[in-house]
Length: 116
Image (cartoon, rainbow, N blue to C red):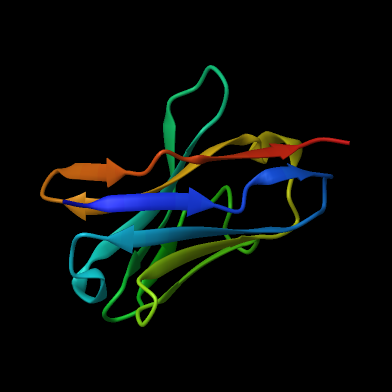
């Protein structure tokens, strides 16, 4: 059974940084497509970034390109998202997810709040 646990969220001022982590278990992490998505208050899910854990190939939404970096540690079965130059509009619950067929299996999420 896929199990994903996000951590690293918190309150940060505009322009600040955070590093989110996602501990994965229950599947072969090395050969997976993993995503970060977020949900701001009152809005739907927004895709942020994708990584192929085998090849390391990445993709980013325009809204975060150049500010956020997705990475993984295959030895630790852990996915990361480095958030730099944070803006108030980045406030959201951040979820990591595993692509499985047409579905995205998500963790419970971690709250990121950007406020002065």
